[in-house]
Image 1 (tube, helix red, strand yellow):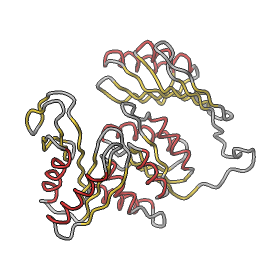
Image 2 (cartoon, rainbow, N blue to C red):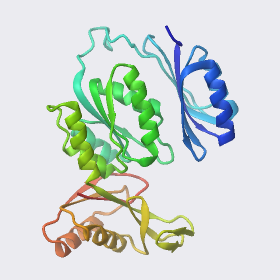
Image 3 (tube, rainbow, N blue to C red):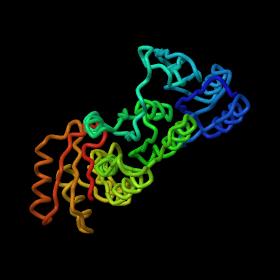
Image 4 (cartoon, rainbow, N blue to C red):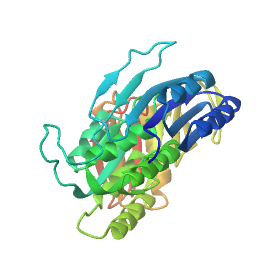
Length: 330
């Protein structure tokens, strides 16, 4: 009763090109969603001519991580080699009926509820998996498209799903994925987590045994009660809310804004912790990046123990390649 294909891709393009793209895709089909900004967009549309939808993206800019789904088809997967003139392509034609499993037998009954979490490192992905969540591990410079999140919701195979984007930049993408999943009959709630530590806090209070609304409220409350910070290294000289930084400076960002500029990571992290704990806190979460030595975590644990009475510290090896350290204060 509708278009035969769902087409999803990431697109690098300017605002004017996206305006023309919207008009062209709107003429081709329906369920059109184009969200993003600053040159990077998530595109989603239902069409009968999938090739024309991809061609429209190529004319607008550089589409990649293309995903084409034929509604009601059999399972087939392909991967393109990519390249300047050939975008990376994944074609997924899943069985939408729910009648048959991977081996032709009956599919497993859907779980009552599941959690899907976007995380920046393999260590955090493993942590979420241990807690029973379906993890989507991000790659540096490649935010997941809404189609990837929809696929994760499908893999969770649950009637109700709580989606944790764990990044402000992914809120629109998560909303688009939730809309698509709802169209497939899944009840989805997006909790607007802005950092992985907020997602950890939400996952810690997740309780499938209570009602969906109560669970979402509890998880949202836990995430909202968790302040977050990240340590990063400046790549170039720039103005910040804490003053001018030079290339190589260590930046302490609290709740998304640069609050501390330092020359050494551990000392800068101690300053960030002191500022955050000055307004109270019971639990400090330290998520270590891929190359951060354990000695830094041990030093920060001692700093919290010596300077802040009755505050506990927990350390996770997140393995994230970008931020050397992520801090959460509950």
